[in-house]
Amino acid sequence: MPGLLPAASALVLRERTILFVRNTRTPDRWAFPGGKAEEGETPEQTAIREIKEEVGLDIELAKELGRYVTASGFEIVCFVATAGTPDLRIDTTEIVEARWFDLREALNLDLIPTVRDALQDFRAAKG
Image (cartoon, rainbow, N blue to C red):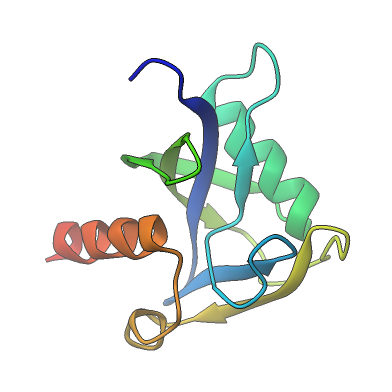
């Protein structure tokens, strides 16, 4: 869609849990870590960079989960990824809180709508 701003995020898995963050822009709702692309970045590069900046994790992307358009005009490419460690180093200028939740807990969180859509897609793909 023309005019949409590129962004990327990742549903980061560690054992049987998923990483969620509350960021400074929407501190009352949970989301996947991620953000807008820098000039010339691929969605993959954006997801890897943003997650490293926000929570200090090195991730490995497994696959693209989907593309989601936000009300604020972003097209977010969401990936499924894995983290080698659960240890987080939060950038408090961007992130209010970061926590690992299992899928059942995650479905009960107050989620940003596009994140809920991505989580439902993940759940459906899991079977």
